[in-house]
Image 1 (cartoon, rainbow, N blue to C red):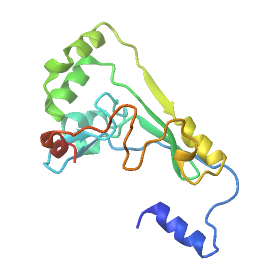
Image 2: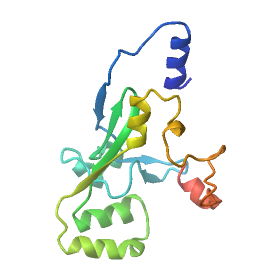
Image 3: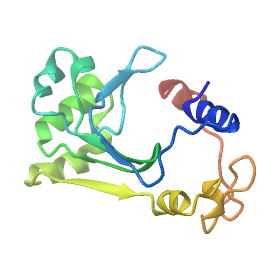
Image 4: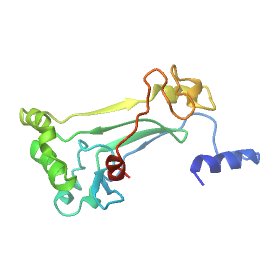
Length: 174
């Protein structure tokens, strides 16, 4: 049973597991890689996330032990933001693409060239303002505060999405 469903069940019995107010938490100890259902390494966040300095040496021996420099911000149990520090070393980035993820680095040659130009250490974060507003106004659903919510089934009628995804791509990402 999902965490949210357990919380709803407890609440339906007249009990409360929530203290009033807003409780924020940073989550920052994610693995950088995990294996998909085909036994291939995939990025937990995205392939541009840097490894923590303490675990970076495992890139070359045991990718399962690498902790990524990515982070999520949680408020009252709901993710409201996330981001990462990015790889800025072109050799490390190429190694991740070719040796760990087994991707064709030719497709990312433009990116590796840009890193070779001297990219400084950098990162980013994206906050889900709609998620924060839903929490602040105690909305039952994020759809209640989104300007353009999806139709039932996750369809975006304006853009005509979602579209079909190739079976090979689906199997790689499971």
